[in-house]
Length: 258
Image (cartoon, rainbow, N blue to C red; front, top):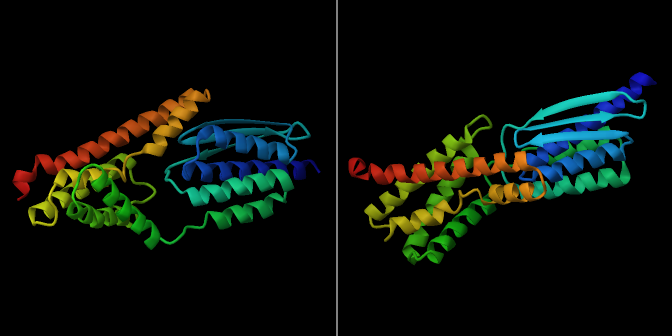
C-alpha cells in the first residue's frame, strides 16, 4: 500500500508540473502556474505542496497523506504565445480540481491538448499580414506601404513556423528575422513596391515586440514574485534590443548591399 501511495503522489506531481510547464510555454504568468500546481496537489489529497518557479524552471515538492515527500523539476527551454492552448489548459486545471479524475486520465487529456498542431495556419498568417498593414497605416504609412508590409509579415510567420526550432536561441533568431524583414523592406522600396521603408519596418516591428512578456513581468512583480518578474523583464529588454539590432544592420550596410 505504501508503494502504491508513493506512486500515486508521483503521478499527481508529474501531472501538475507537466501542466504547469505547458502553461508557461503558452504564455502564462508564473504566479498563475504556481497556483495551479498547488491547487492540483491539494485536489488529489496532498498534505502540502510547495512550488518554486522562474521563467526557465519549475520545481515542486509534495507531501502525501503518509508523510512521504516527492520532488520533481521541469526545465522550460522555449516559450511562445498560444492563447487557445492556454485556455484549454486552464479549463483542464479547473476540471481536475473540481472533478478529481484519475491522474492517468487527466494526463491523457493533457497530452491531447499538447499535441503539436499544423506548422502552417492560414488564419494566423492572415492575422500577421493584416496586423502589419494596420500598424503601417496607423503610424503614417501609405496604402502601398501597408500592402508591402504584408508579404514581409508572412515571411516572418513562415520563419517562425518552419525555421525556428526548440533549441534555437530566441535572441539570435529574433535578430535574424528582424534583419530579414528590414532588408526586405529596403528592397521593396528600392524596386518601387512601397514609398517609405521606415513605415513598412515599423508595421512589421510591431509583430515582434514582446509586449505580453513585458506585461507579465510587471504583473509578477506587483504580485510579489520579484525574481521571476525581473528575469522576464530582462528577457523582454534583450529581445527588444535584438529587434533593434536586426533592423539596424540592413540599414547600416545598405550602401554595400545595392
